[in-house]
Image (cartoon, rainbow, N blue to C red; front, side):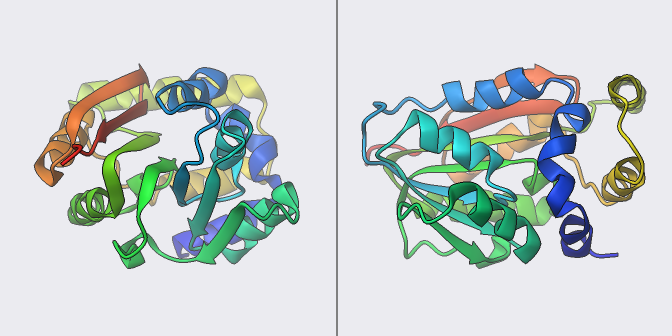
Length: 226
């Protein structure tokens, strides 16, 4: 089954299950939000890649009430949930679009993404980081809240066991558990070190990891002013 089909399947329950599937939910999304340095009233232009139901976009919209946010996702069903979340808010726009279609014609102050880019092949991740860099305005920022592969087989296995234990303790119901495991089998996680190196290779400055709990990481970088 394709990634799009899996997310179409879980769209209506996605927000309900997220705090269980991401055991560090508050800290994880909080770190992504706190990594955004703009003035709270700044009229920033934001792109949310793989926005899904608009979970992260809603946090950004609340924190930055003058921001305009464009949500993209390959799943129409997920974006339908986002439309229900935001209603007719004119500063929120949508497009059913794969990451590979990102164009530099539109320029953004901020590009965000949460739990999406890890679905790409490693070469596609690197190409996307280059596209994001070109799509940012000078001084613009990229923040990615995502997953990382353990730096060794032993560490990766330990992280996976911890995640399974955390999710089990959270009491995730069926069929959400089966759906989550189907998605996990299609993950293409890369190590944090590789992801940070790919950002630097794309031209980003001040590349750093802002948060990590086992496989869950928040990192990003800034485009130079010139």
